[in-house]
Amino acid sequence: MDSRMNQFVRISRKNSRYFEYEDGTPFVPVGMNLCFERFSGDDAEILAIYRRWFRRFSENGGNFARIWLGVPFLNLEPEKPGVFSERKLENLRALVALGREYGIRLKFTLDHFRDLRPVRQAEMFPGAACFQNRVYRRENGGFADTVEEFFNGEAARANFVRKLELLSRNFADEPAVMAWELWNEVNCVGPVSLWKPWTEIMLGELHRLFPKQFALQSLGSFSDFYAYDLYDELASLEGNDFLQAHRYLDPGAEIDVCRGPMDLLCRSAVAELCRRCPERPAILAETGAVEWCHCRASHLYELDREGTLLHDALFAPFFAGSAGCGQFWHWDHIYVDRHDLWHHFRWFARAIAGIDPAAEDYRPELRENRRLRFHILRGNSHDLVWLRDKADWADELDRGVAPERFAELRVPVEQLTAAPVSRVEFNSPWENGAEQAAVPENGVITFPPFRRSLVARLCF
Image 1 (spheres, rainbow, N blue to C red):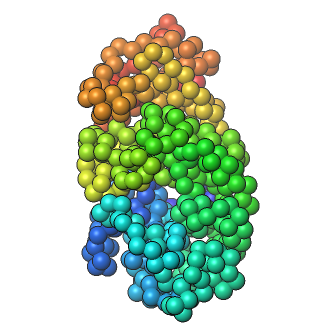
Image 2 (tube, rainbow, N blue to C red; image 1 turned 135 degrees about the vertical axis):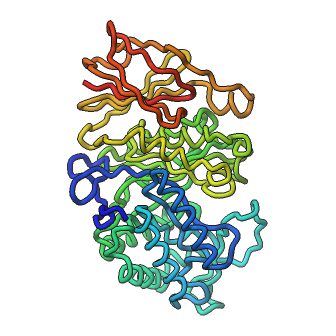
Image 3 (cartoon, rainbow, N blue to C red; image 1 turned 180 degrees about the horizontal axis):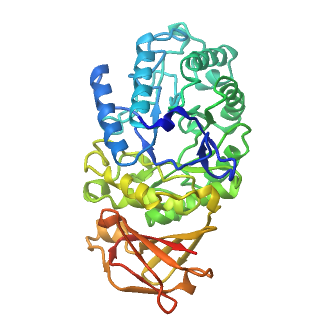
């Protein structure tokens, strides 16, 4: 076990846009969603599946994962409101133990339901999450028949706090638990006037009960016109420790960037967060690709066996000013695990190895020419540049165009930075993280051959 698992993660004391361990060394979240197992109902089998996911993720540099509690394996109130299951609590303890074992910090999403009514809904696709919860209904001894009554009712709020108190007694002193997220995409339960007052109360309760861990809330995909105002509301929440966004490649999205290149889609989402809260860390907490308006996972996943979409979703947010990589949603048989794409996390971790984002005080910038986008982080001792081929998923996956191999690319230093560059260190993700170094000659940087993307550290 990593000895740093005995330290909590906190907001950096040097730079509040990033994270650090308690000893002040940097923590960069290399994260993804591992929210639930879709099909098995057997606890031992689910725990074994999680162990495999954690192992594969950890050995490829992963250190942060999001998990939902409101699913059968972890739902603390499976039958009656206020009757907490020791069996489910033990499952949760087992997952936390796996996090410690594999060096993975955990963010637990406390619930995600959107309806208490017994409305019959067609399953969107096999293994899709269920967004109904009938446990809290009065006919079951509960205190609410609608989500409005759940969020506004004093009895419902008191019961939610009792659940938080139970979790606090078990996990408030556990460094492997990094954050508690109140709800998945809380705007889906109703208008701001319904969820915002409840959120403000419960964020306060999280801080009271979990003083060493982060308290968070999340909203749905930043893909439509109304999302601008919703994310303004999220940014205004007192006690929301850092700002998160969800955004997907979605052909049904209203916002144009959500239908275009994956790197720009992700970059734009982080920029929206940073504009709203420049003093707090920003995380792209859910991303991926879907069919029209999230009706199912994208057909592109069948075609993307090399992981182009995942690669862009990991790198682009960090180079836009995020505190960590983008966190992909489709983790299991649908995409990442299906195509054995875990190595992409290793590629990202290697590309940023040894850097201290807080000390560098990175300032993001985007430049481009006809063939490439240069995603730049301006630092104090170096500039970090991620070069991305402009031919992206639309060319490669939809049109079947093979990615170009760039050979002997030469760029004048002045086109990338005004600082004096003494040495350039290269990391080639698509060459299994191969590393090289060079010294600019006659004010020109000669880049090693690469395809799709390359990372360059311009050292001053």
